Image (tube, rainbow, N blue to C red; front, top):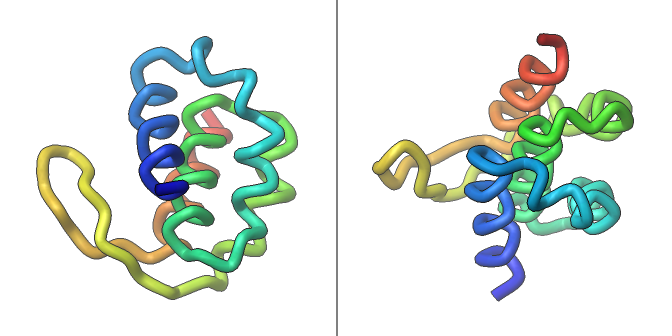
Length: 94
């Protein structure tokens, strides 16, 4: 059930990041969880939020090549934690 909450936060942050700002502490903690889906969704959401602390938190995830199934862009696809962390880091550079 937790993964569903993190997925929902990610989807909401993509469209209305201001509504998810209060979840920053949980998202920052989420990147250190063992569950690859929670790590990846936390990383992605931090990227959508433009969290200034996220770069330091996300860089270690670039070495996490565990994959999971994730529904994004209207398809269910396999994704690696490292790929979503890299996407989030790219968003933070803009």
